[in-house]
Length: 129
Image (tube, rainbow, N blue to C red; front, side, top):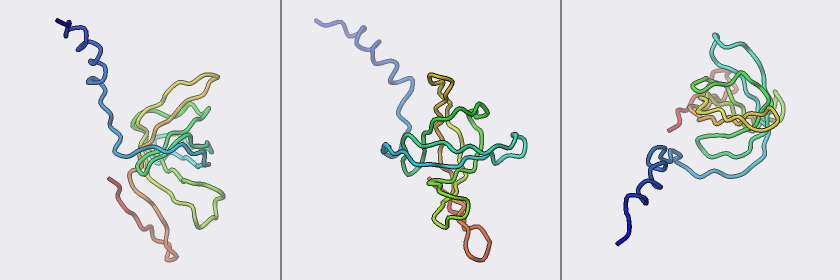
C-alpha cells in the first residue's frame, strides 16, 4: 500500500496558491507607458517593455523601484508615442512585484478599465472583468 501522506504534502503548495488567471498569457515584447494614478504616489513615467500579456493583465520588467502591490496605475499599452491615436490607456492595479537579477523587478498588473478618449474630449470608460 502506498503512503498517501507524502503525496498530499507535495500537493499542498498548489492548494496554498491557486491559479488566479482568467485568461492565457501570450509572450510579447511591446512597449508601454506606466504612470501612477494616485496623487499620494510620487509622479514618474516608466517606459518598460512587456514580457507577456493577456486580455486582463500585463507582466513587464523594470528598474524602477516605486512599484508596490495594490498600487493604482495608468498604463498605455501598446505605446508608440504620446500622440498616437492607436494608444489604449488603462487604469490598472499592481498585483505583485518580483525581484529579478541585476537590480530589475518584474511587475504584474491587472487591467481594471480602459480610458479611451473620444474626439469630444470626454473619456469613454469601459470596466473590465
